[in-house]
Image: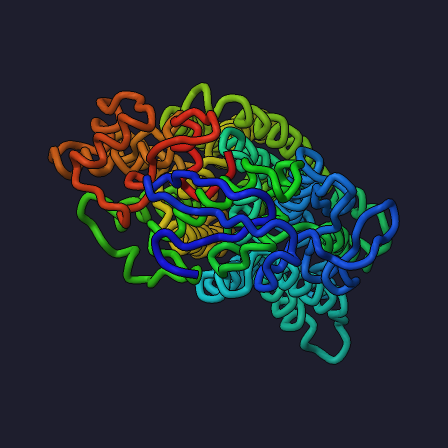
Length: 612
C-alpha cells in the first residue's frame, strides 16, 4: 500500500472517486481474481457448502470470523447480513453489558447473608474487610482496562472480547470452588473476584468501540445508551436472583448467583464466534479484503457494490489523515493542547466517569440492602426485597435515556441528573435524622426509601449512560481509543474507592453518608455548567471546530458550542481552513467532496471512520 493516492483493488469495473480529503483515487479494474493474480478476491472462498453458500474453512468461519458468500455475492455471518447482522452485534454488546450490570449487583444480596458469612467469617463485623471483598472487583476491572489500553489495538475487537469472556469464566470458577475447609477460602474468593473483574474490564473497554465501529452513524449514540440501560437490567436480574436464592440451601444461597454470571459470558462467547471483526480495525491493519467482506455484510450488499467500495475508501482516508496507520497512537498524543485540545477533551470524558462514581451510584447499587439494614434496622429479607423493587425503578428509568439523549441533549441531562441526585440524597439524609435521635424508625425508613428510589431513577435516566457516551463523542479520532480506555480506568479507580469506603461511612457516620454524597453532587453542577459543551446533533468534525473556535477566539468552549451554527460539509471545510486545520488534524480536516449522489453532511458524519 502506498501513501496518498494508494491503490485499493476491488473486484468489478474501474471507477474514479474523490475521497473525503479531495484526493483522487483510482480503484483498479481487476475483474475476477484470475485477471490479476496478485489480488485475492473476497468471494473466492472455496467449494459450495450448505444453503448454497461458498464456504471458508471451518477455522476461517468459526475462529477468524470470515464470511460465507451467497449466490448474489452478499457476505453473510451467522447466515445473515444487513440490519439483522447489526442486531446480532448489538445482541453481543447488550449481553456483555447485562453481565456488567449483573456483576455490579450480585454481591449486594450475598455479602451480608448468613450463608456467606458462615463460609467467609472474616467479613462478619468488619466493614473494611467487607468493602475490600466487594471492591476488589473494581481493581480487576481497572487492570483489564489497562490491558486494553496497551494491547487492544494489537489484539482487535473480537479477540479481546473472547479473552474477556474466558477470563470472567475462570474467575467465576475460582470463586464458587472456594470451600471453607482448612482456611484460605476467603483469599481464594477474593482472587477469583479480582480475575472476574479483569475480564469485565477488558470487555467494557472493548464492546462499545466494537459496536460503534459496526454501527451506522445516526444510531450510534442511542445504541450506547441502550448498553447503559442493560447495565440496570443486569443489576435488576442480580437482585432478584439473590432474593430467590435466599430461600435455598446455604451453599446455594451464594454459589448459584455467582455461577450464573457464566450464562452471560457463554452467550457473548458463542455469538461472537461467527460475528465479523470491526471493519475499521481491519483497515488499520491493511486487511482490505476482509474489511470489504465485513462492510458488505453489514450493509447487506455484494462486495462489488460501489457504495461498499466507497465506504472502504472513506475509512481508509480517515485513518490516514489521523495518522492512525498500523492502528497505534502514542500515548503522548493525548497530552497535547492547541486547537485540537486533546488533553482537555480527554479530561472531560474521564471527568464524567469520575463524577459518576463519586455521585454515590455504586454505594446505592452495591449496598442498598446493607444501607437499610444498618441505618434503619430492617431485616435482611425485607432489605433485599426493597433492593429488588429499587432495581425495577432503576431499569425502567434507564430506558428513558434511549429517547431523551438526542432530544434533550447531553449537557441538560447531566445537569438535570445532578440536581435530582443531590435532592434525593438530601431527602434520604433528612428522613434518617429522626430515626437516630428517637422513635419513628418506620416512618424514617419510608422517607429514606423514597429518597433512594428517586436517586436511582435520576441516575438511571441520566448519569448511567452519559459517561460512556460522552468520551466517544468528545475525543477526536486520533486519540479516541486510548482516551476512552483512560476514561474507563477512572471509572474503576473511583468505583473501588467508593465501594471500599461506603461500609465504613455507614458504620461511622450512618445518615451522614447521604449528606456526603449530596455535597459531592452539588459540587458537580458548576463543573458541568462551565466546562462541558453540548455535543448533541453535532458531527465529529463540528466538535473539532468547537474546540478550535474556543482556542483561537479565546472563549469558553461551552460558549463556542452555543455560538457555532450547524454546518454542512462545505461550511465545516471552510471553517477548518480558517482555523488552520491540515489534513492531519483530526476529523475537521477530512470532510471534502461527495460522490455517488451522497449528501455532503452524510459524508461529514462518515469521516470518523464509521459507516453512514
